[in-house]
Image 1 (spheres, helix red, strand yellow):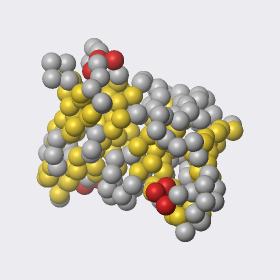
Image 2 (cartoon, helix red, strand yellow):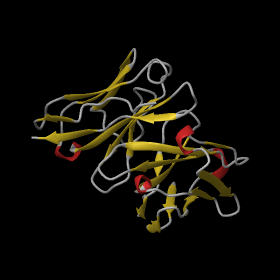
Image 3 (spheres, chains in turn red, cyan):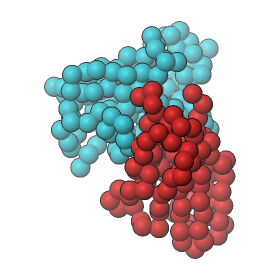
Image 4 (tube, chains in turn cyan, green):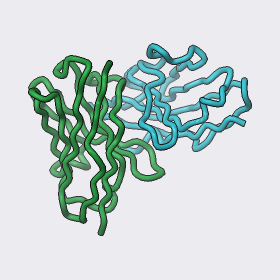
Amino acid sequence: QSALTQPASVSGSLGQSITISCTGTSSDIGAYNYVAWYQQHPDKAPKLMMFNVSSRPSGVPDRFSGSKSDNTASLTISGLQAEDEADYHCGSYTTSSTRIFGTGTKVTVL
Amino acid sequence: QVHLVQSGAEVKNAGASVKVSCKASGYTFTSYFVHWVRQAPGQGLDWVGTINPHGGSTHYPQKLQGRVAMTRDTATSTVYMELSSLRSEDTAVYYCARGPWAGQFDYWGQGTLVTVSS
């Protein structure tokens, strides 16, 4: 089972909006709404930013939003801030009862 | 508040075994699954396996079957991940994380660097 596909990098200017895609198959993203997104700053542990496709944990700014269409999930950051510069990883539960993660996306704030 | 505190960095020779601990606090230990995820240098996240602290059942990816073993000690709210027959490609930061069986990982440990030297 290969990793979910994410763009290697996405960039945007302060205040702009960006969207990160995460493409899987009908055995993972397409099968359930168990899609999550994690933010990871250098040399830090991942932090949960979105779960069940579009639910935000307490404390995560509402400029983060999530969606899913067929086998592709997306994370949108509106009003990009300097502190949003980090790596972002998507993750999904699979029909084999395993977990699969994305290839990771580096977000750069210009 | 929820905390997952992991043991310190390890350096092992190829072929050896390593055992990493993850001590949970701030919640009912047996109410959440504990998952292990690793990240090789410069790479993405990779699921290592899951243990149910209530009962101790485990689930591992096929590629690690036979080399990974997860156990728990309910008396100390600690989960252990042991990886045997280490190879250079096992060099990674290993994280424990709390979560439901099928959903998100909501709290993570600080990570443990395991270096395998050949």
